[in-house]
Length: 62
Image (tube, rainbow, N blue to C red; front, side, top):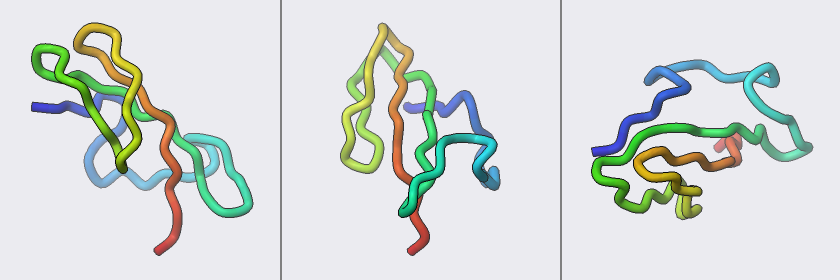
């Protein structure tokens, strides 16, 4: 099981939550993974530190 720890489900994010580029909003996602299993977010491998993971992802309008 994976748990995101820095944003609630359904949170509305804006430039205060990350870094804006011309094409996206870059946000850092943090969470916990059961037994330290590797995590990918949007096909980007997260950095693992035991059970904790972090990944910077691009949020884009679809």
